[in-house]
Length: 302
Image 1 (spheres, rainbow, N blue to C red):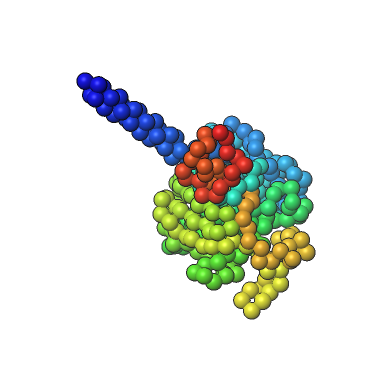
Image 2 (image 1 turned 120 degrees about the vertical axis):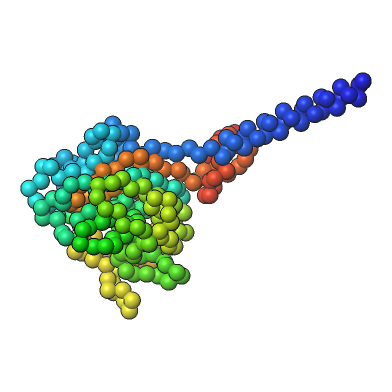
């Protein structure tokens, strides 16, 4: 009788113990996505226009309507090279980013032909505050967003463009300013789902409608002067002072800000969410997550 009771107690203890372990494991596996846009206002974001002071929302270009973050040109007579970006205020290093976008209507007058249904999300970007007053684009890695055009059968989206930067593709540094993805072409004003997997200075992967369309490695500061393979970035044409960057050529970009681009065509964004892949990797900690890739032991809570 004692033996039976003892065995029953041990079995019950093992069941409860295993159940507890599984519960903790499930908590460690539960993804905690951060909503970067609250659908109500532009808090946590900073605006920078070419030729304007920080947080000047020139002609009310960035607006919140119907829970969307909208880039609009209703108050413009002409674009007049008023390139702009809106920056999320927290930098990140290792993360997954997902969002939905759609182009709407017609391009505003004065925009370049190559900016029709053209926008982007800048990754590992310099901060809004560090932009020069007349700077058109931040030094960053751009997840370029393009919409289909009637006179073009194929116009890929999810490309990479590199203002002031360069990336490694197929083990070779690629100095081309924009590198095409293998995505489908998306016509009209339809919503398109996009994702990026950013692993610090190691690699970036772009995903469109759950299809991996582009992968590259070692995002880095571009050369300030032309070389055998490189005609030279348009530092001065885009208002980027090469003297601020020439000693950093080749430096790997390991973290930075995320910004949304405004370059003459209306576009809407929604469901902008981020999964931080940096955090406590100690399973004994309360805030351990099994999906963390980069360990930050100083964040562990016990």
